[in-house]
Image 1 (tube, rainbow, N blue to C red):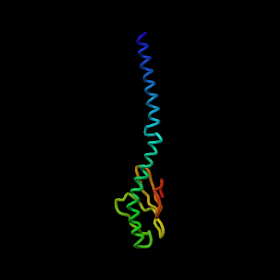
Image 2: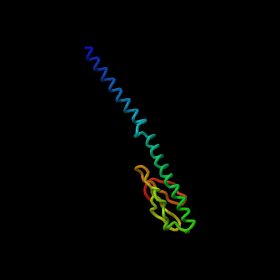
Image 3: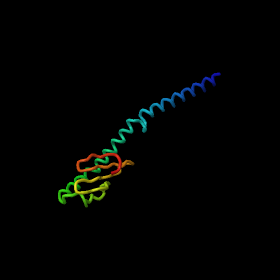
Image 4: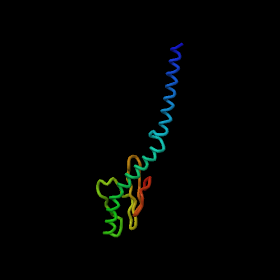
Length: 114
């Protein structure tokens, strides 16, 4: 009889432990809303950092040529110039697994490709 009681107590403790783990994972695990939000913010910040140096180079090109067409980005910038014309441009970068773009001049990083 005491063995049966011990087995029931161990199983009950195991069930409670699994339940508490599942609740904690939902609220603070890698798929929780706070972790997902922090990850999205980090991707946007990384993309904005990539775009900053390139934007300065594009403004210098525009000041010299009066157009964004034909602009060359600094090597190793991790940014691609997808579109450039007389009055604007679209930059694209990959930050982690996410693709971000910025339509300029004066744009902000946005999710998705150009």
